[in-house]
Length: 149
Image (tube, rainbow, N blue to C red; front, side, top):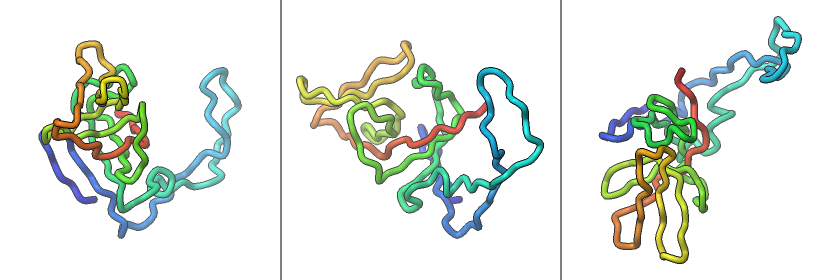
């Protein structure tokens, strides 16, 4: 897996040459409410690359640094799966590049003010207004968050 570090984002690219790594997958769902009888065997296998990476050439992994998105359950150290080819729309969770720095925020379109807002999920952080004069681009759309416990 290729690795590149930026002051605010640690990027990893999937290695398309690595062999599939099928992992055991339980044959029945795990109950999140009342306990259900557990099976002591697995019925299938699961390849996480095949399951989580839609477009390998445009997919990157990044480790979260910071606490601006804790209100959405995204914490420091979590791993993001980012698709640079995904369609951007109002409300999408995205990795954005603002004035050369990466940030993870919810993107909101404001047609009344002809701008975008990058919205954090932590009351200690303020939304960031983005206008056409700012050095800004949406680097990729977050497809999955892998939690670190």
